[in-house]
Image (cartoon, rainbow, N blue to C red; front, side, top):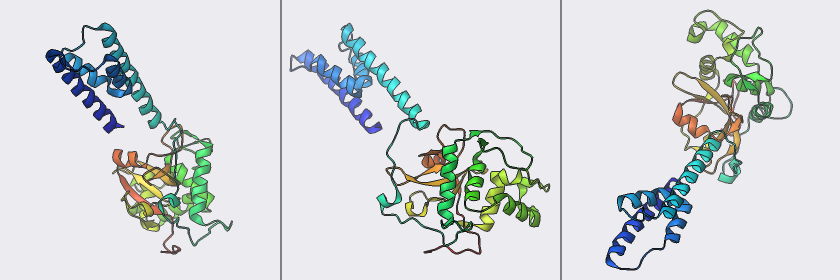
Length: 292
């Protein structure tokens, strides 16, 4: 889109200058209808710029107002699409790993014994969370767990792992009990009501207990459904990798940052905005990954 808009506006600007030159030399002219057509197709800025720089057709009010109207409409359209893209309002085509010749990795482990491997169970748990669409609310809860209609980014991961049979709360509480010095966010005072819901603590646990995977987004096959990704130098956000992918093969993420849709094509945006600082496949150290 950016290349198209630059090209058509440059073209219209040049044509406006040529038409002004041809008007002085009595040569073939470009019709106003054609200029208006170019403006409607996205070249209104280049046309308006050419009109004032080359002092061309500015005295023709209908032409001037027509180009101005096109420019206003184009700005409004760009703003709408920008907002719609940010909030994932407009439907967009998604792809799967098979569309890019990528094999989906499955776990050799089935923690809850339901006949579904752990990675798929984690993904399904994340999708249920996206469907539930809890409102973003950061609060302290006795017992640790917020109600299902509330939560933060860590709760997406916690609930996804619960769907696979893993209590992240129990796992982290036990690791903190044994190695509290490794968890600076705990500050030496463990609190089982909140420790497992802090991204910094999840980062320590995942580094210690699960399998780290590449941070390179261009290694498309390395980004698998059910993987966990952490963003920010200060470890401020966490998400689950979806089975959906965009047209470039980069997967969607399932997360809660207060956005309207919890499963969305924003992995690249978060990578640029915050930086990817962790990528994990939830395999406890004693488990083995099938096929790797």
